Amino acid sequence: MDTIAGLFSFITTPVSWIIVQFHSLYGAVFGPDSGWAWGLSIVSLVILIRICLIPLFVKQIKATRGMQALQPKMKAIQERYKNDKQRQSEEMMKLYKETGTNPLSSCLPILAQSPFFFALYHVLANIADGKTIGVLNQQLVDSAREAKIFGAPIAAKFMDSSEKVAALGASLTDVRIVTAVMIVLMSLSQFYTQRQLMQKNVDLSVKTPFMQQQKMLMYIFPVIFAVMGVNFPVGVLVYWLTTNVWTMGQQMYVINQNPTPGSKAQDQYLTRLLKHATSHGEVKGRGKKKTVAAIVAKGPDRNDIERKFITALSKQGLAAQADGSVIKSSEATADSDAASSGAAKRQQPKRQTKSQRQTPSKPSPKK
Image (tube, rainbow, N blue to C red; front, side, top):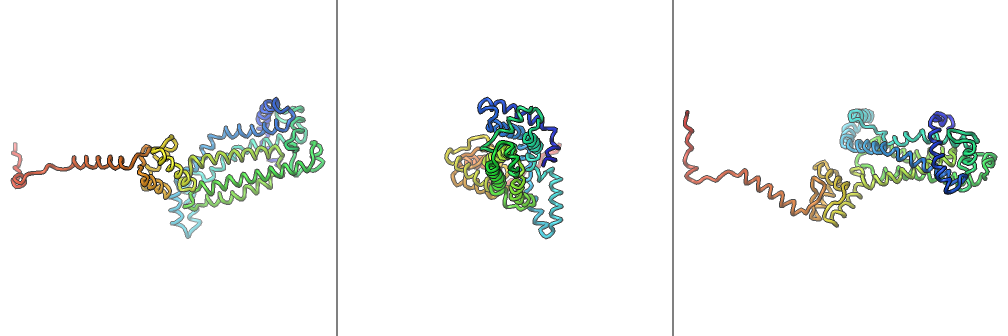
């Protein structure tokens, strides 16, 4: 871990500078040597990084939506090559290449913040050894080295010896309890976030290799974090627990407001939207109207959940419109009938009398 962290030493100066700026702010409230001042500085570092990564998160969402748009084609490939797994994988890769879709796009936020994670690890490792690093002078290093969160120094690790923990002015029992609790919370938050994604925001009607990979990661990632967590300083555990909580909240918002078509989350969202439309007799909000408009535009390509939504609206006497609004079904029928009758009137030829029908038409005279 120390070797990997050393590879990202180039970013330790900006990371240490950000921590020092936040520490000066929180130190004025909690005291410069307080564990809360240093701990909240790390939490604020995470929040700042995640705010900067929001554009990347939006890109991730768009890439995920691109994957969802390919679901029918992927399902067709599965059916066509169901007895030839190798050819099936080849065709899937070909489809990804042709459409410019990357199945691993969901890993982008983790990869983007990895340098900051390892840089923070490098900073805390130097603090534990009492060495200056980045913009942290000896006075700040000594202050951070003695800062404790629930009795555990922010530079202490679960696997540290009793002598090393004692040198940091703490007991091994306090360090083990605090780090163990944080490791469990870190792993559980990672598992819950991935489980929520798989159970609520995935189109389960299509089984793809990507979905199988995601399901495996749901169990593998928490185990990896638990194993690696015993070598993380308390400060790094604070960092990773905070970013997991941020990811979980961010994902909950996306699932509730922009669910994957065909997923359980979409069913729940459209149920809420139906209740809203029935209660108010209209659809309020730009996002809700955009959702209804997208469903109307799909026409016969709607999934079962979307068809159920349109049918339920009809049973409530409402009809969805192309602009995302809803009107009473009687008004929509009247408009349709009026348009049809108008077209029929325009196309109906003039009725001839009996004498006109019997009299042959005269040819036009030649000039």
